[in-house]
Length: 349
Image (cartoon, rainbow, N blue to C red; front, side):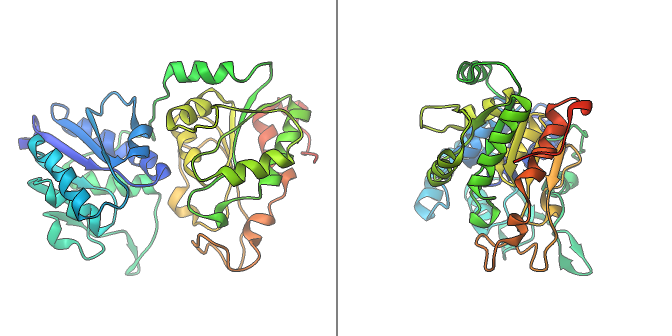
């Protein structure tokens, strides 16, 4: 692929924020493989906001969610003048491969899934064990896709950038002394991934009492009910990093200035991994094989249940995979990072 040395590489990023963060090692591998090429990344607006500030990405191209044919043609007209030589399609969908085809990219690389083989000029099979498609850590799946291009993993893990001005703005909203603990009780995938909001509130109260923690609540669009349930239950003072208008840049900044993030298996978890921040992750119905990262600091709290991991957005039973995780378990895991070892005691609720 030496002919791409000074050409244009177009990468279609995954749709979910966490997946997009896990894609950054593969995107960086593309940059390292083709250092003189223009690297453009296309993705949903929220994904573009997530990737803002990464210096080695030359251009971010927003794509509307689930575009219809009219929106795809409009995007293609925008991109065709850029004359992409190579399109790397990280999402698995037929729509993403069709969109890459419409841009006129001469070569189009993606996984051979969803009946899209005719839309791709280059493809590789998904990971299988005993002939069955099986999950692997998403960052490694994305790296495997670009390996045929001669890309290599540099071993540096996920990468995101937080704006220093946004970080200063968050710090101004969290007065006082003591460790800063970011708490993200939401999860866009569905309610099955959400530990009860009142339990997050109990954890915040305990950490304020036992470690002098200053807690900051993180929430995004569509999570207003979760926010309300948390604030109704919490007793300690909780700060918010914005005035009711959540933004990706502010969320990244809040994670960056925090000493610890407590969250579900959701986007903020992977933002913290990318920003080298420790995480206490409360994990329920999703398979850890998708998200267990060698670069993650902190603790994953998970219980094995007979019905899991079900991968369902809505629990069909009693949500036992989450409700069997007690607030005291989360507090104890958090105190491991917030207090010196000789001051750690089992979390009290």
